[in-house]
Length: 596
Image (cartoon, rainbow, N blue to C red; front, side):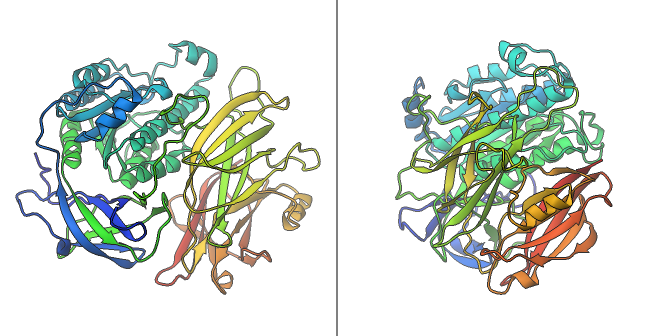
């Protein structure tokens, strides 16, 4: 069944074609044209990379195999890898019980998702996960009925904060605000692990259906950490995320929504789905039709073979513009695509604590705030800077105060090759009493790296662990911005320390009105630093005032602005930096919050 609408849907994903190890890309593109059976050709498409046209050399229509023989059962990881290579579609269902309410809308959406699972074909794989399911036992299955029964057994828990397992009793605080914050982090970590597992399986496009009313971040709090990393991982692993939100948009009462017209919980779902080429379905009654669209998206696409204008680093994310020629219909594509080199072996990340073949589960530690800065390095490499600080204690939280003292960090490639390791104290403390450096820095080749961190107390006891992917950007354009580094000062002495280079940047993006910020951003390009402009904006993007930009006498050609927060009302703001580029202006944006 085809989607009954006039829009053309294009989803761009990439893998390096085996024809060339350096300059040929394969993009799977989805096109839906109701009422036509014409097979599109290379002349029907245009693909550009940063404004540079890419030659479309071949187009192939890819559809599920007509073979209806059931896939063999899966019992081991090796079975899963072998069977996935022959599967027609690979689908994951994540039931976010922590952010669902027990009402009629949920019941309708749950029934629609269960029916969707049962409609999958005999050569489709599916996996169903919930928030507290083990991250190391993720396994797809050919038993669709068993998977549908797991969906039907889902129990909404948004209004129920009582612990139901030993894990919740032992590790989740009792304060309501802290419970909700921890549940949000669990959901994002679980989704990240699920996306990584899907990406470790052979095959092209994978589908992830997220049944959730959205992550209810209260007004005034910064956006949920981990969302950008999750989107990047999904784009790199060629996973499309689709949100099914039982709560209707026009009358949402989800805690933390900014209002019935534009609830923030829905905005976070959109921030996950749209950049990965998915969409969000609102209302339980609309779930069945929306899931049919999801199935259509997974059932037919075109494989475009294009010639690139330059060699690209494996695993790097780049924007890609795919359009239909001679067509005014809109295009839906990923925010970025990832380069996968077929000439290189693909390894799942390993750790000594997991059996061979299982990926390292990604997770965010609630004990720390982290910042990874990137700027252009030498010889085509990228300079990485890292700082961290303890996460603020949630008001009303009970129990002993756990205060991390240092982090031991190990950085490797995806095949386990060491890149960097070191220990670091939190930024913001007096450097004279810090047990370790307050900032780590190293150079890396543009690629995707695996970062594993042990969070320790003063005695060296491991309090928690964090695992994340780090996508290292390639600074090859004529004009590029690096990552904005934020320094905070509460006194003239601290401001002097920033100017003398004795103070590291901070990871926090929430500041008090008693502080002054110094924001420093690297910019590459001959003579570009003198042309950089900066402005302060509201959270909605309206300009509040222009800021004075100072050149900084350091090797990376950085510029900085200084901003006293005393004159700002409490709320969310953004700094936007702009420099003239080769074809269009280059823009970098930093969001932050001001508290009393």
